[in-house]
Image (cartoon, rainbow over all chains, first blue to last red):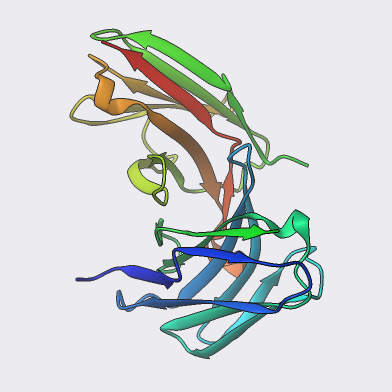
Length: 111
Length: 114
């Protein structure tokens, strides 16, 4: 199946832990993104990579670090998790100038 | 600063009715205007999109109306069905150096009553 796949789908962890979310796309797109969706459904961009190069780095705590080993993968690592990090995180990809294809999301709950 | 403003925040429509969601933007350099549909537990999915050289685009029951001079665009869902109940996001993007980054509206929760 051609898609954007992210793992895990659910992540429950304690405050202070470090966790990673992985994302892979097999659509041949050149740009990948991480979005955070809060409880009010607002989609807030966090990072964007184009061909492994960071091009968008919004005002995000530096506890969040993206890594793109190749243009088909964009992972998100979060250090020292806080309660306020609880949200749904979406990975997306696009061909330049066209719409995004989103993954199905990772629901992160910090307890 | 919200680049794309969307209204209403929530909308309740009876089955068979017309659902209308409106968006407004300020940046006249935006050149691509998609709408996304999101069901609970799923990622947003591209529904329909328009470029500013046309005033209307229709795909089945879904129509985008685009008013370039007013800097507004809207989604019309004809013959709304309970299966259309979802959150809808409008968006706009710039080409060029932003590489097509999308700016999203805050979303509209649509409920269609049977």
